[in-house]
Image (cartoon, rainbow, N blue to C red):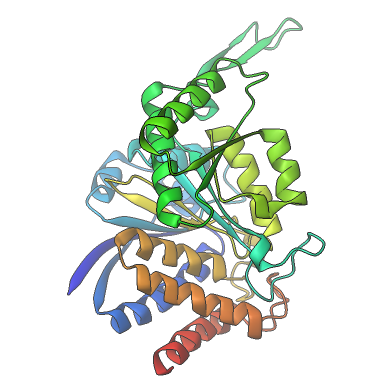
Length: 358
């Protein structure tokens, strides 16, 4: 029996509630498919910071390196100044563990209300591969004459050949494995960002021509990408882009697939420790009310299993979630689902049971 060590970071607000339901589903599916998840809870987030002044101690980071994957609930506390947890925990994990890919499936499930007129599940099914360790998020820059009328703020987008090449290679490989339209779209801004995206475009075409001739290469400016995601989302198969543009278009993707209640993502190091999480925040106003939607966290668990190689188990979870959205929920919104957080988790387990029973 395969055993996987998983670090669990419930985090802040409703994070613990959605992770609880995700673990419930993972426990059932692991028994069905004959593997074991050895889960260890970690106290990281706003409460720890307020109590100790620590965000992510180096000793804890070292311990996290020994796990196969990290399962994260949410980060964000109303009593902690914005940026402290995001930079000190999320970005530190992504950069220190070299989680250089942010992977975001954008898929509309049956029964989910889509804000786009006449678009159906078959029209919205693409994946965004976002570079996760470079660009504007490296934090390079400076102030000149800060606090004066002559102030200048400089923020640098750093893109290296190494970082761009490994991200594009992952995207090409993912497009080939996905085997849908076998089309990879580079999202950039070559007409304005003439240094960064000159590099991206050159490496994109070099890799495609030399190693991935079976993959159709496509390009779209980021503003055009946003327009086409709304007007013709069916045009996209896999989109690859830099850190900042990826951050923006993946949130747009979450909206067209029905909202933050269903959107999940992975921060991937293909040869190291990866982290999986729901895209929505900690939603502190719903904490303890048992009304938050756990489906995004449950789908993050599905992505975690796919990453570990338990692909059939991951598919079974997604199939069960689609059964729940199609047959059970009134809405994805907190408090409007027709069920409590706990009951939605139970429904996904029921869907798994129905699949086993045939």
